Image (cartoon, rainbow, N blue to C red; front, side):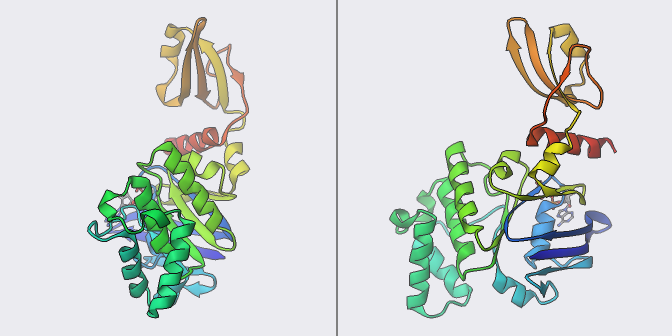
Length: 288
Ligand SMILES: Nc1ncnc2c1ncn2[C@@H]1O[C@H](COP(=O)(O)OP(=O)(O)OP(=O)(O)O)[C@@H](O)[C@H]1O
């Protein structure tokens, strides 16, 4: 279990994390929020790479004030993961394994083979990392995070820049690893959490604006999502920030619109998706 209590991080007076109190249990946890919401700061504080300005947190009962012990419990894949391009995947993992204190060569080798297999990189393990695709690098990133069998994985926007197939593959790998562990995944792409995360938290301007499950997020859009077929003139009257999607039909433009009130007499309320709920929540916060 992870818990945070009034966790706050300020950069020269700018509150990047503002009084965040939450609890997560085992499984995949999605941390959502727009750019600059404080996701990376939250993950770096949890990974003990930055100290909170105030507040506290613990990972499986170990407080962040014991960073050495916390680091033994976690694997971390940063947002900008860089690798020595001249090493092979296997050499890189061997190097990280030594850094993580797995000193017995045989045990290290066995663990590396097992993890390479899990991330589907065994047949590429002796190729230089500079020849890897973006998706392969990210899988190598997960492999290095998994060395040492951490109880928690912290993964910062791992699917940015991946093509759709690699993105799905990567998500599936993370889901597999979340059994019996906590995988904390930050993203601003709702689809990344849609199929895999039971628990979610949404940050906006450093504040926790929602913590719960997927349906809690979709419910934020209840009564605020509208569908209407409009002509071009009617469409121009709608606030472009409120339009989620459009599709041109023979009879006009079919629009999905987020609005507290019906945006047009012909608009009908529809059931919100997770993305609608997220956009309604972030729009509301921005407005506030
Ligand atoms: N080292 C720093 N010094 C000063 N301000 C910082 C620093 N790191 C982050 N910030 C600010 O703190 C806020 C939160 O940034 P953070 O990177 O945690 O957000 P994020 O949700 O991860 O954003 P993104 O999705 O763009 O990575 C932003 O306003 C950012 O400009």
